[in-house]
Structures are given as structure tokens and as C-alpha cells.
Image (cartoon, rainbow, N blue to C red):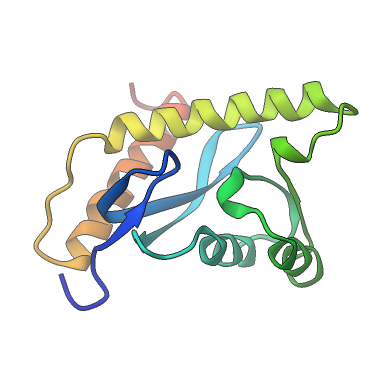
Length: 148
């Protein structure tokens, strides 16, 4: 990999890893991956949020704690016409809808994880990205019941 390749990072559970993080924008009703972004492990999730939000025409973003922060919330709302909702934002009203959407998102990410859980070997950044895109394509075709 070149100088912009894999880096040490911290995962959601606080454990260190060496590699990349994949961020995906998933269409909630169909559970299909609309777009994805691969970043070195040391890059903050907020960078991915801005990139993913730019690929849409606005909407509602259900995100985990990696996407927290008032500055990001304001940027998403002002620049990307996107409202960020997080389970920790829930104050009771609409709790069941947020919980249901969270479970659906976790189910999608769980399906993606099963496809990515095996190591992806590549000699170049382009080879790695191509391998991951093929896995995302298979995931989407599976969600659409085109393949099994």
C-alpha cells in the first residue's frame, strides 16, 4: 500500500487495529448499500459522514456514536440538508421508530460484516477497493433476491 494506506485505529469497542474502516450509506427501506467509503483506521468517522452526506440530496441519517458532535450536526443540517439522529438523542418520543431503524441498520451492517469478515488480500489500493466493491455488489444483489 502507498503512504495513504492502512493505519492504526481504534474500533467502536476501544480495541486497537491496523487497517481500514468501511463506512456505508444504506437505504433504510430496502437495506441496499447506496455508497461506501474506505478510510485508513486512524481517520475520524466525521470525515466519512461528510463524504457520505454529499452523495445524497438530503434526508435523515441514523448514526452511531462515532458520528457525534455539534459541529458535525450543524454541518450536516446546513450544508447537506441532512438531519442526524442517534439512539442516544432519543428522549422517549419516537423511541420505538428510532429503535426499529437502529435494529434494521445493525442487521444490514451485520450482513456486510459477514461478507467482510474474511481478510481481503490485495497488492494495491485499487485491488483492495475493487474487492470490497464486489462484496458490496453481492450484498446488494442478495438483498434484492437476485442471488443467494
